[in-house]
Image (cartoon, rainbow, N blue to C red; front, top):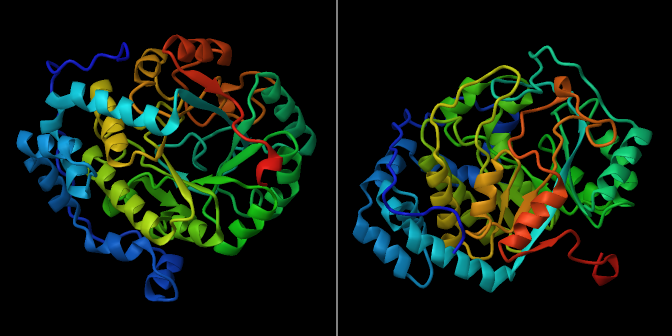
Length: 412
């Protein structure tokens, strides 16, 4: 087992229930059009059937017997996932950790994939309470040009990375499809794997970006609780919760190889209910878009310009429980742990189910080639170790850091 403590004596934290789902709140014009259209199935249909408060109560009603049954099940259901993320499951964390490690090694071997985010722009046309890029924040704005992007790519390659995640603020006019058409070929020349975390696009736009070399798209919902979502998204297209909810369906129909899901833990008052909604979303996508692979991140709210305090504080022990629960629920799912977490936690949790890690991340445009510029960053990272030090810690845990896991002649 890892050095991460999973003894059963730790305290159990039970956050308060949120308010009712109020499905109509926060839906924008694009979302209403998509809800009314029956051209293609969407997770929106399932989301509208789910009741936030009822799900929270179901999770907290799970007993030790429910957890034991989930642990012994050959294949876990959504009800089992409820049990595994419940307060009752905290006493079972040692058993969950052992099974999570077994399943991870069985599926993924002794490897941890390394990637790094490449921030292209901090321009944003949304006003979100939790993000340093929010349009209301007094922040120096910068969008990298072709020459600056090339320098960033060379600086990242010099650190050993061959997998990159492109990140921008959400500004569809200045950092939209036309910009991506220009920069994607530059970036693609440098890296074997290119992912993207930008504003939600249309199915046709995703399909076009795939022809330019896009492998993966991460589209985090932030929270599935409509009233909370509306409270934290004040202006801009991101207010349209349903347009965002339907984005993974558009990705699946566009044939994107890997689709990333997740919520921002601490934004809503109930991380367990939010996590269950993600499980419902994943189950829907795997049924309707089985050709794509899936990944999951579980970022906890970090300090940023604007200074939003979390609605609930998730302990390290609870995050370890959530990681294990996800691995037990989905043995084939990629689980990613970013530099939002501390070096101590990442060193300990790396064997619990994690398959991908970022390292030496910079959350501002130009951060790799030009050095630190805190006035440009999205949020404060927690693990600021050089990539070589993170890789050494992974090796010390008995695992192999992997910076490149395929060659273009194998299929691209």
